[in-house]
Amino acid sequence: MGEALKTRLVQQALDEGFVAARVCRPGDVPQVADRLRAFVEAGYHGQMGWMAERMHWRGDPAALWPEARSVIMLAESYAPEQDPRAVLGRRDRGAISVYAQNRDYHDLVKKRLKRLARWLIAEAGGEVKVFVDTAPVAEKPLAQAAGLGWQGKHTNLVSREFGNWAFLGSVFTTLDLPVDGAEVDHCGSCRACLDVCPTDAFPAPYQLDARRCISYLTIEHKGPVEEDLRAAIGNHIYGCDDCLAACPWNKFAVAASDLRYAARPELEAPALAELAVLDDAAFRALFSGSPIKRIGRDRFVRNVLYAIGNSGKADLREIARGLTEDPDPAVADAARWAVARLGQ
Ligand code: B12
Ligand code: SF4
Ligand code: SF4
Image (cartoon, rainbow, N blue to C red; front, side):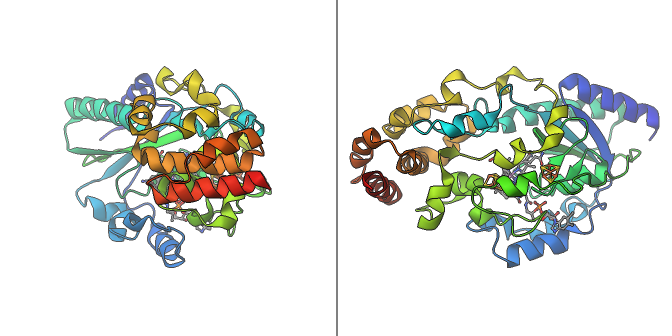
């Protein structure tokens, strides 16, 4: 299968709106199995029990689909128009991570991947499978093996051409496409992302203890968050971008090609007072089509209450007090914590 097809495939991917597309073999990431095992053995995955399952697939893309011969790795930019850190100083407001301020990327990237895969089948035949985020596929290591960028010290993929504001997706195919070759590390002596982390979630460069990461705590962690981590969560109420925003390679960020990632104005700096009182129906209405909907009203309001507790705004105490008897135990616990903290 020749270079000509590959050149047209890459052009097709760019026309679809991806910022880059490169190819590797499924077996190009032999280091992943051991590193994933070490990650899980250290307990860094916390309550994400699904990471400990199907490790033979997540650790080895060649085992996931043995007939696959090539993996086309794709990056889609969602670079923000404003510095997402601006809201961190506004303590009566909540910070929602950039990727969640509008439509759910899973839907948008998956549609684009499927269109690209259909184009490939029509042009050259073969079989395909497409993945984004939720499958047991080691997307960052594969992206590095294909040369899209490298896994920086914050563990995310960084590119010299588009920085680190990019989602990753893949098209596995039975076709033998020419490969591109891996990218090397360009972090050098920089450690901006490590130093900025509010919860000290990096035990070492290139390693993340998810149990301390605000993204994990606000999105994945069920029930009450350990008390000693709550203050450091600050006003993050869904995800965290602090390490991503610190990366100097973002000076090369490419504007997001899909306007549906642009922040909804009401989610750029939402008032904590309004979010805390959302009931289930209002929560669902506000976050229809958004990835935030997935965590449900209870976990979201729990997060908002931690932010209220951290706000230093005594006028928010009454709102927290109104939730101390909430039927959800984690919400009620967070409300009591916020009331006590604001009373200090
Ligand atoms: C689980 C998960 C999480 C967990 C754990 C994150 C993590 N770093 O592992 C939590 C919930 C915390 C999370 C948070 C976020 N996530 Co997430 N997440 C995933 C998921 C589903 C799996 C990642 C995984 O396998 N982790 C397990 C560990 C073992 O893998 P690893 O990070 O690659 O670890 C490697 C390093 O430790 C390295 N290593 C170890 N020792 C050494 C030593 C040296 C010298 C070197 C070089 C490397 C090295 O080897 C390991 C294996 O390769 C992927 C999607 C997917 N299917 O891949 C998305 C994914 C990684 N997430 C993504 C995003 C956008 C985020 C957030 C930015 C969201 C947000 N704004 O809140 C944050 C970023 C937090 C951070 N600093 O990583 C994107 C990242 C895109 C990119 N440019 O890289 C992905 C790829 C989803 C997607 N399809 O776009 N996520
Ligand atoms: S996302 Fe936030 S909490 Fe998680 S590692 Fe990065 S800076 Fe730390
Ligand atoms: S902030 Fe610095 S150390 Fe962190 S990923 Fe970017 S270049 Fe690497």
